[in-house]
Length: 115
Length: 107
Image (cartoon, rainbow over the protein chains, first blue to last red):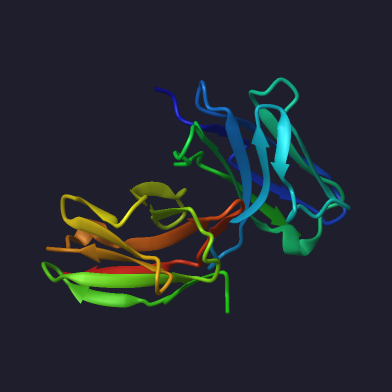
């Protein structure tokens, strides 16, 4: 079974530029998550989708971050404009999220450096 | 009190020893609990789910104490390959990761 795919793996941009990340979850997984992980910290949930609907985006900085999952499969996360503090690894995860089962499987992440 | 709290370590443990670390959580309505391991510059990988009073998988045992609001992870007969950061995850509607506990197994 193929895992969670993410691209690009690395991205370097200047502050105030925009950037987009792509994620393709494990086939059949209805729930998709985007996390931000800053060096030395645990992942912080940015947004959670159930199919193509948003379940939780309470920690998404909506003035600059946006995410979509239009067909309930793959997803994109965008930052516009980027700030220095956005330098982090952006992780995508997916899960079946059937009743009582919320194990998440992570992609390799996109390492973003904002200069 | 932080929502999910872990001792950051590092725990430096000789190979073959037993090591245990805890994770405390603030919300008594928490429903699901997990341990993930994360190697340096890699993504987190699911180690164990903790759904009821605890469970065991080989050398790893996870326990849940709802009264005191913590979960624990015990690693027996530790191997060099166990060196990693161990992340605690708690779900109560929203999903919160701890900052992780770093474990170094010494030869």
